[in-house]
Image (cartoon, rainbow, N blue to C red; front, side):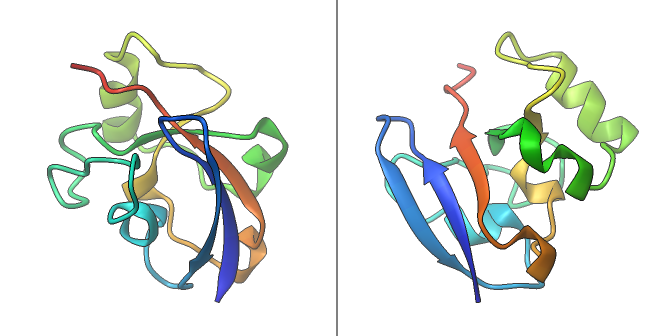
Length: 106
């Protein structure tokens, strides 16, 4: 288990005990005021959009072209912080990851 520090859509900071080996989305989707994850992690809807603290950027894999395209279509897209949480597989190296759930796009 590792910790995630998530700010939800209401601005509440939540410490999440998260499982390594599954996506960030799978770890947070059932929490209140978290991501919707409508497509279930298939990288096809962008409803799991989060802002990752820039200090963590170097530890994350680069965006795939599909992820970049979905994020680029969002009005809340931030080049330095936006990620789809379904595309971030949690590893021990990401213990303490700080993220904020993005506003709903629709």
